[in-house]
Image (tube, rainbow, N blue to C red; front, top):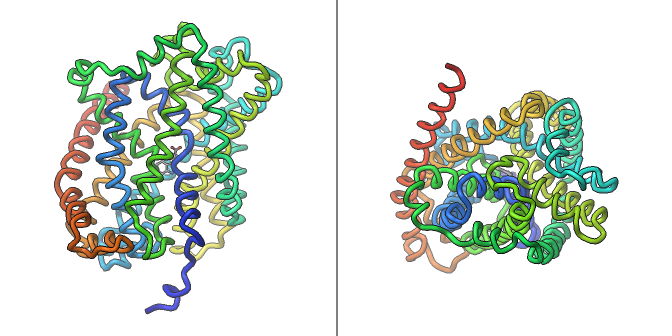
Length: 447
Ligand code: TRP
């Protein structure tokens, strides 16, 4: 046994792992991306598909990444070598490319949120929440806040002080829940509340049946994005878990807490949109800012409430952005023997440059977002599922560790077969639909 293996750092407590994973999972995906996806895909029909997808595909797929991470105790690229299947390391490389692309526009959106944090103090967006978003979301100012957010993320990763952020997450996630519950109570008193709930919570199964080929892939993309799946973040985090932990239980908790935050965000956004008369779905990436921003503008103590709300969301975005950057940086450190600060500076600079077009145009941003979430993340999950289901021989054994049963136990065996066939088929199907759709969009744009 290599020395490295014996001394490798482990999460000090079970809570440490769950918190770090929740810190990665809870972010703009829940508060910004989720409401606008719900709006674009017709409301409650999307919510139902999304919840189903998280439960039946998301959690088992998270366990797939956990198995690769814990059994290899390596970063997502070296993990495959370590498990004796170096020919699969291209999965890790795909993850690195996906990470670059996601972080590039994620930081632009986080820049908007940072700007709203400060704008709350002066009440800049209180009058015309929608118009203000139009002014700040694209152009040189958006580039500036994108730069600011990338610098802060880079400084934390360069110094290797993610632990500090994990501590912050411990406070921030509960704070976010409390703020959301307060805003939900306010949204409940609005005129448009009933309509908002109807739209968000009362699914029309006819709509699902008619539009499932568009709702299913969108729900899949959202589920993978929000759970931080498909690019190796969960492989990395699981590489530090002890063998006596039950992966299924931890994965369940992470998914539950993460989903809770999304559901609560929708309970603020939709009553507000119906009250101010904005059609959900018409706002696109500005939906959060019109919805929650509009609510905050009206409540007592709005400047403080806005500052706290957007401030907490900025920190949630920061802990997610760190999880992506850390995968890129640790790859560079391990494989090219560069020092951490240099690696971080170079990578962050490239991410910043790649993000500039998204900061200049929200159409570019949504194109980046749709392509990464709906194509590259499902592709990453699909390939990892093939690996864990069909190539790596000890998957069930790894999952069984910490559960009290062995590889022949009912749950590990069921999970393995479930991964091998149904999950592979569903994710493969999602990929085919999305690739076809993207091909259509691109040819429309270029011709
Ligand atoms: N899950 C985060 C969010 O919802 C974003 C994120 C972090 C992510 N790491 C990821 C998305 C890895 C995909 C892959 O905001």
